[in-house]
Image 1 (tube, rainbow over the protein chains, first blue to last red):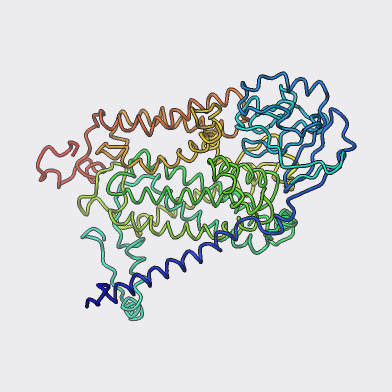
Image 2: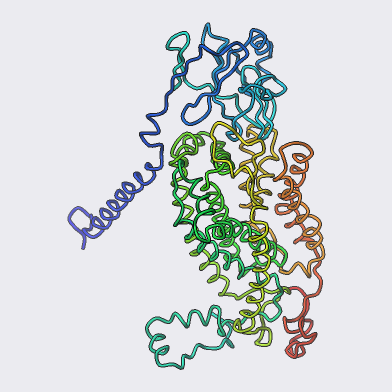
Length: 177
Length: 432
């Protein structure tokens, strides 16, 4: 039975009911999907402070940031020269050492210790570990080699080792995240 | 559905008659795996593997439920609860090793089952849905097996989880958020372990559901057979019970001997010593390999070492790895040959035995080997052939091949003659 405004009562109820069910469906799916994302306690533990005063030039440490290793490396002048010698345009992921460090602190190379290929921990931060043919880090899983600025030079990894967000709170303390 | 000569379920006991009028479950069983299901009389031993796969699924569910009774999905204690199950729980060692080796047995059986399908053209009309559902089951199995391997929270568990979830990070734009969503954090941790346990418990029952659909779809046209010639008359079939029930029973015997040999004498032969080291997010094992049943696909993943135009090598590897299985979904339409069975396809048979099988063998081997030469190059060649086999070889072969003459019927192939063939309009053995 047609109403005065041309909208049938039954069509209106039908569309309204299906729309309401659709909105309710979205309302149910959103929490179900969202609950799988990182929880508040995981996010709360997402910054970390590191004392770097004891790291000598040529040495590196592994710290933990967001449950993943982070490498803090005190580069020697030779390693810095080595990194700056490279023609940036020839790199797979072109970046200079300056872009990967803080101004005036070019010797402090702070990167995630997570290979950008499939997430293994590259070797080269610990004492006596192989540093690969470019003198930085070497991932044993699939053979990615990183240079002294932790830039990808060889192997399957697509990107340089990620530089996390960080800041020097003092000359000897770094806050990551 | 069934053939017109299928025996009808006729309950004699009054209770069974009463039941049949109210819930005809015994009738369903009789028509599915009883005397009411006529099956080609010429099935060879490769046709036992579907039943064996179902047996493995039951074995995994039973031992898995037992494992869950003694397991705690928490990164602090998960490793210890598994060890405690093995050392302290009565028969825990047997349950644990039966479950771990049961996964391997399941994949052995399923690979034979799949390659049976490849050779005998089981995926062809009218059984495309059987095949598609089977590929879905295989994908579910892979997901279930992967998450199960994470649960003991050893080094291989942890790094396997990291590498596999890292694959999703290769997807452009949404990769990293997706990876964090899957893990519930930035790296595998308690949140990931818990959800993997939850899903590892759920997915086998989803598999049971899809298996029911798989068998349902199979029972519409009925089982295929080694000649690939469809059933024509009653003399082509025998009832499932007792003939194939007995034969499957024999298969259980052989399977049990092999399985028990592995379980009781070589329980760790297919495992990795590294997984007896508790997970350590700070140190990667020198040689990360997945379980053996993932090796062919892992080899394809690692075969891509060069960027392909604008697609990074890592993404290419991930796409190829998933593509290696997804291509199976298209197989019923890539293979246009009207002849099902490889036995009557001289050219297809050659490519199957001297192309696909060696390529898979090489991929299997290289997937478990370190990521160095010559394994990378071998994987690349084998992966190239693998895709060419499905996308180029099969369509071309099915277009140009002249198949061998088919028998008139299953009966003729078994007995050498078929009375019905003499009455049929000649010539009967040509391809439709």
